[in-house]
Image (tube, rainbow, N blue to C red; front, side, top):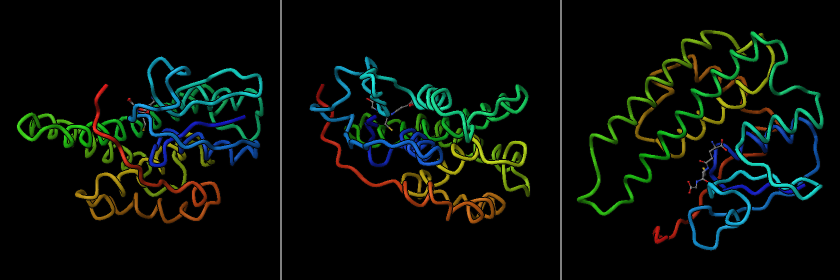
Amino acid sequence: MKLITAAPSPYARKVRISLHEKTIEHEVVIDVPWNENTLTKDKNPLGKVPILITNENEYIFDSKVIIRYLDQIKPKPEIYPIDPKNHLSALIIETVADGICDAIVLIRLENVRVKNLISKQWIKRQENKIVNGLKYLSNEISSKSYFVDNYFNIADISAFTCLEYADIRFKEFDWRKSFPNLNNYWKFHKNRESFALSKPGTQIIEPITY
Ligand SMILES: N[C@@H](CCC(=O)N[C@@H](CS)C(=O)NCC(=O)O)C(=O)O
């Protein structure tokens, strides 16, 4: 199977980590979904990565959907907890972590607009979501090493990915200083093979013209 990703994409990284954890053989294809010649065009009506091309040549998109598919074709290690209570708790952490990334992306897009169209209020609104989201993650992890039920699952994949995305795309906020317990959590996990091998990269985005 093939995974279409963008080098810095935190959503694509969640899938890459899950593929690694499950030792599923795959090829990674790097795309820039913002550019005109994006590979997403005939594969995802929303024009977004990640997209998984299965061995049966089907297109599956959205990180949450792709990872559920991976859990179906190779159940162990389970990425989404099976126990209903843990499943729900993990989904909430994933939603907060993804929401923080969404807000970071929106600020980045706002900042590339023509200068007099940039809205400071909009940026502030997104910044509040990021800080409140991180506060939520900090409260939830407390002094634990895993978010849900003391084992590695989608909650940790999403939270860790979100923290390192903030490192590259929201440098102006020093989350390590504001939330030292999240920094301890990050240190505990940072050498995990699937994390170390999927570090986000940079990409060049053309001016948005279409
Ligand atoms: N909810 C989606 C979010 C995917 C997403 O926003 N991907 C970004 C890259 S980081 C994208 O492809 N954006 C292109 C666009 O919005 O046109 C997921 O979890 O997969």
